[in-house]
Image (cartoon, rainbow, N blue to C red; front, side):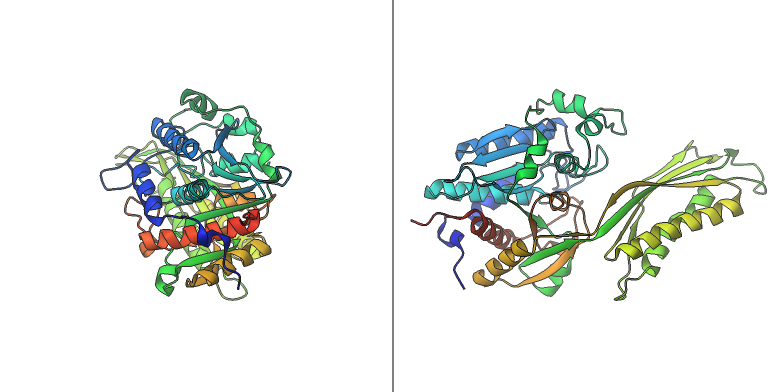
Length: 422
């Protein structure tokens, strides 16, 4: 086995960890997490810190029209397509220190090590901080990478509104991070690599140092509206068209549908109701309208389709029995997405050469890498996280896990870009 090229570079797990802790102070929460929702003042502050760090190690920054930050380190052969490393700095309202940030700052640590060593690669290297991966403030998620890959148009992204009425494009300009570069230029990358925490507990329970991600599960999101009739809380129960009492069994059906829809290998689906809005939301009024979101995921695309069909069928049954209307509308779909076999093999070989415990696995969670894989050869590397806890202020990893992920990411990236040996 050839020793990966990054072995002789001054990669520093300690410096990576210090950078993670410093970034976490921006938007830090009382319980130890981070709140840097996209296009907020905290997001702008985190971006400014990353810019200072990137420029300090010789990187050139370009910002595109959606606010994606692209740092470039020139290669010996500028005609070669760049090799990019990326993730995101934005968080959930009660996010952790590591989701997304680990991938960005691990890429930065590789750039720092190359700068310190005075090393060159054949292909240029890019470090990307994607705008609005989380989709917490502006939905759907992964807008920056999605628009860059042609999945969304720039116009629809810039026109998106948050729940409080803020407009994406206006907020991007307000915080000073709208550039002029064309996001579609990122479709010309030679490869894309992303390190991310697992957001599950398979690696921790299996005592693995890293996960090599082979593909992404299919996902389908829906929006459900149940409409009945407002009624006084003291009115007789008979004859009510209570939207909440109709929505409740339909919400419960989401879990039942997910657990009961199996793949050919017997694997169940996954179902989540993450948002519920009740109108008029008064203590003594039986609601006339309930909105809720549904997130279905499955390893088998055919099974995922059956889950959506089952939700619509159950909604129709409940609506008929309760004399309400129940509308199920598709909101967002992400297909089963394989990652590049050559890059997967390269990441696996890096883990083996480092003597790390590893396993191959899918991701059930959307990441910028999933959109990138539609146009660009892509691979993900997973880092364990304690208890699988994520999108939570208590999200936690160890410095050793972060370092292992950094090493595999760096080795695979440099094997792809071609480190010039002296």
